[in-house]
Image (cartoon, rainbow, N blue to C red; front, side, top):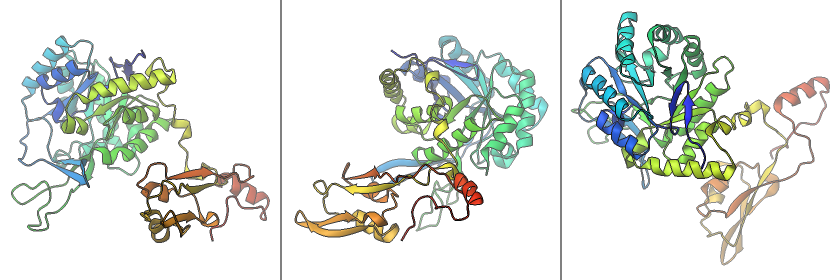
Length: 429
């Protein structure tokens, strides 16, 4: 079998699956149960000043029959006493020496306060520290969380404070609530962080009750913006992970977070450069046992692909992530519809005529109207395939153009030499 063990910024674990800092890592008893079921590591729910949470803390976004497609919380860091957490971290590490325990910290922005906390955490025997510079609600209003992570200078400064006294690797957890995550990633690297974890939650309001006009979740008829996570944020997370991984000025390991629920999700993050992955919402939905399928799935996939260890494929997709201006404008796809599989719902026709490029006509066949592709009008946008409810009924097929690959950059260079050169692609009618 493949070797699933990993090393993320100097933090080693028997597999890449870690629990993210959240309610599932709020106590030693929880983390110990998770380790028994196979989790490779856990980031302890964020420690800091004593806080008081509200009642009514979570809400979800459902889509059709799918529950918790998106998930929101207005819960703050741990409400349990500092000394209780420290004691349980020590106990858990002694019982599970091979599993990674990372302590998440969020401290007021004073050098002495941060260093005092880090020195106490050093003595727990933990494997690493994660600096929570990402939470968008509650703590940010107190000058912590994303209030730090949105300011590169603060990120670098506090990371340097921590690195002066930390005896274990330090990960910096980044907020997605920023226009360019690479700027803060560079600041973390400049502060000598050993790694970066991302993404934290996305700032959000989940919805409004149309009868009493209270936001969800509602606390005595009032509400607040919160942190959005779950499957819906995965595309945002993948983009930001790839941005950090491709940035030449950063160059430190990544722990990927955001909508991970299956082994396939985990592999996607790792293909884009993550050495470990952190899971939260899926565990809150389905429980700790999901890690069993994740371990089996990853192991089987690696065996099928011939990968002996995780480093054999980490980052392998990064060369395929390009700017739009570097894509081949002479690449052509058209849709092909299998009339034998078509059920006559006409969704593709409606989508094409109302929402895309008017390339699907209707003709009689098989006792009902059958969609037919008008090739000259098809721009290969994929919309018809995406709305079709029948797997395999509509497929996108490459059509040779006889033209050499040409990007927008290449076309601009050629145009400068020859203003009358043939444009790439084809003209939309």
